Image (tube, rainbow, N blue to C red; front, side, top):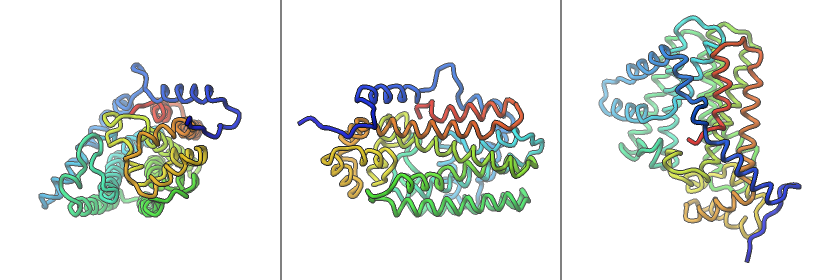
Length: 355
């Protein structure tokens, strides 16, 4: 018996198919277009100093701390968050060097959250290689995550600005709360889109937001400018996470750097699943609900087809595109510069990528 799905407003099935096709094409960066290397080259000397400082500040008298922290920090990744700190500071006219320290702090906080997340999620693959917990064990990963958090707070003292410490302390607390909220929502098919958006704001976008605000604070900008930078970071983080969640059902392990369907395996109701539940037939709703409740990826192929057929990938990409546009609009008041242009390009890259 042929499956039927609830139509998307007044769109026909053919229009929906066309939208999905167009949005999936948009997710592939142009060969001659902007990429992250362009942004790194723009802050070339600063970028080199950040990477050097990361390496130096990872050193510990404890051999296992060195091994685990270096393993995850050197395992690839976009290092987008420290890059944002550098670009934000420069776009706001900062002439000092404390943005190097701030960028390093942001990367350490992010890395600590990854170590803890992979233990909680029982993940085995990240950035195309085995997770630290898979290699060194859960106990070592959790404790080294704690080391990175504490090292980050040591570096905050070196910056010596109370407002920056306040921003980072609040961000770290919010991230931790987001992790707990996500844990509560796991295996809960009743999770709403609003609850999901709160989770990705806290877990992902909050650190983007903090990095942008710190750049403005270092440059001595007004609270109004700080708010604009915060909005940019918030919307950029949301855009990146939405695209990642869409890729979980429409990419490849090699591109994504983790196992496809990991979110479903862990029972995480991300936006594609939440939207599909509202649109699918009664029969397919049962399949999705049971998969969220029980976890596991044995029905990943079937659910991926339901998600595509209900327009849920298209819906998720459209949400990401809207966030990207908001990010760009939020920094219109910044003075024109190559750094501002790079921030705009990054917001576009967030949705025009395949990894």
